[in-house]
Amino acid sequence: MKEEIIMAGFGGQGVMSLGRLLTYAGMKEGDEVSWMPSYGPEMRGGTANCTVIISSKQIPSPLSSQPDAIIVMNLPSLDKFAPCVKRGGAILLNSSLINKEVDRDDVKIIKVPANQIANELGNTKVANMVMLGAYLAHKRIVKLETVKAALQDVFPARRHNLIPINQQALDRGVALLN
Image (cartoon, rainbow, N blue to C red):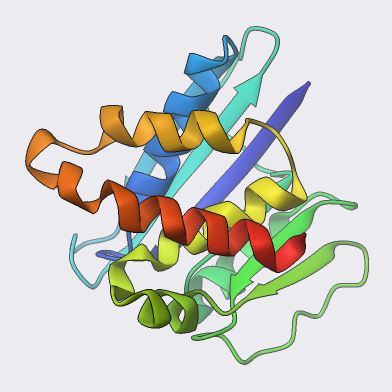
C-alpha cells in the first residue's frame, strides 16, 4: 500500500496542519510516512501546500509528481495540481470556494462544501478537517479514530480546547460520503 496526497490552499487555511495530522496518524498505525511542506512568499494569505506519503514500505523520496489524490482548498491550488493527479485518482475540492468544473474524466471529483460546514459548526478554521474527513471516507488510508487521537500530538497544549470541534468537523466530512 502506498498513497501520495498533495494538500494545497492559501496560507492560514490549515493545509500544513491537515498534512501533519494525516502523517502522525499514519505513523501511529505503523506505516512509513513522509511530510514535505512548501510555502509561497507569504505564510498568511500566500499559497501553501504539502505532500504526504503513507506507505507500508520504505519511501524512497518525499516528492510526488503524480499524486493519488489532491485536497484543494482554493481555485489557484486546483488549477496548479489537478493536471498532476494520477488516472484513477481523486480530486477533493472545497466547493464553498471553488465554483469551477474540473476538466478531467479520468479521476473521481469529490466536492466538499467545507467552509459551509465549518460555518455551521461555528468555526471557519475547521474547514480543513471537513476536507480530511471526506478524504478519509473516500480512501480509508488510516482510521478515523487514529486521526482523532493524533490531534493531541499535532495541536499544541494551548489549543487542545479546539480538539472537540475539530473532531466534529472530521465526522461531518466523513458523513458526506457515507
